[in-house]
Length: 99
Image (cartoon, rainbow, N blue to C red; front, side, top):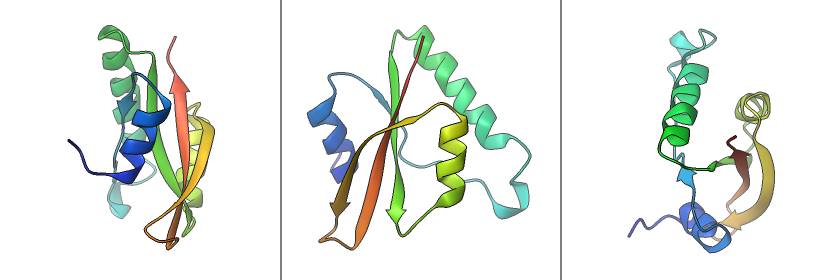
């Protein structure tokens, strides 16, 4: 069992999915397309394995505008919001359906 409130939210809302927990690119390597390539490789592998969706969460509070913009550009849509950790953090849940 993976004890994570975000993962558990997706398990309650979706039958199947591929979950992205964290992708971190060093400040010195940003803007080189590394995260985009990682995500595109994941999309390809997930399709080959027969998966229909990729899910993840992005902080709303504290805000993460760079991640918001990246996920929007990659085709993710918001499917929910939840305050976690006694309201100290709020996340937006995203999904990208694979074709």
